Length: 178
Image (cartoon, rainbow, N blue to C red):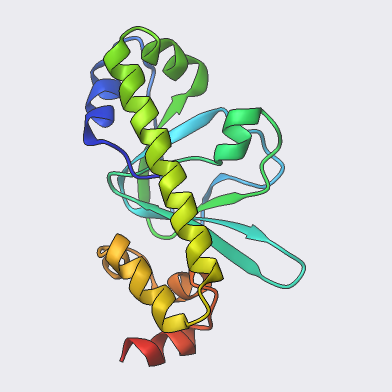
């Protein structure tokens, strides 16, 4: 989930928000499938991937890197167990924000509620873009669409995870990038 940069500032300036700093090593999890998500995470540095496991494969769904907000959104919104894993791709620093504290904060000012609304609308657009990507037949077109939306992707995320996100093998990704 990418965010309006003001949200970071607003949250970090609030004494009523108890930010929990977390430093993850490579391959360490923020959340695992079966857990209920009660936080969202502000990524200060590093990178994470969001994925699920089927009987056939790991399916990468999303990435987060510095400046991103990430969570297991369905679990966060419904208080139901997550189907997703969020795992550090490399050493990563995040600040965890409790859902209850965040809700109290955004209800204090209309401006903050508007920022949250804008963030959620942006996420809905991203999800629709992702669905279109998955329905796009050509691997080259999928890659082009993602690169237009996320030009930093190859600077932040290893190619093997990008290939999984694009639903192709690492070899196919390597070939079409040439």
